[in-house]
Length: 133
Image 1 (tube, rainbow, N blue to C red):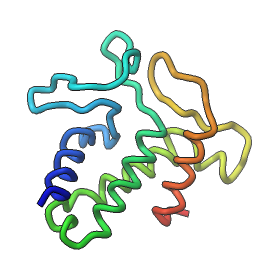
Image 2: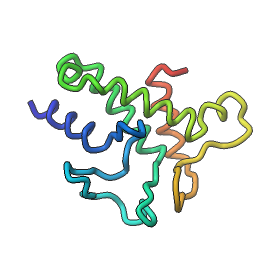
Image 3: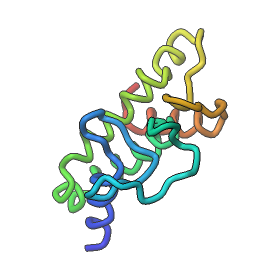
Image 4: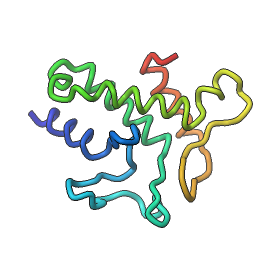
């Protein structure tokens, strides 16, 4: 079915298992970039975005909660957990929620864009929906 095929393509194309992070651009089997936004990476360095991780976590949670999709994509739960863990630890939403001292960052890597509220809103929604709190 189309939903299963889309979810399989989503996980295989955007989830980097070795880094346990979600890419901003789709990668094909031959590791060529297929899309993305100009300026996402500088000198071959990938930029990791909190908004990408938040949307990916929400998508993976949706995949996992559907019995048919879960059977075809057993890694969706792990991918969602990785995305939420990145939001809490790597992007700094965990310490910010508990201590409130240092604001979280919206991007990791070279050429980080400025922080904005919609990235924060998506990240908070993903964390809450995941039951990580």
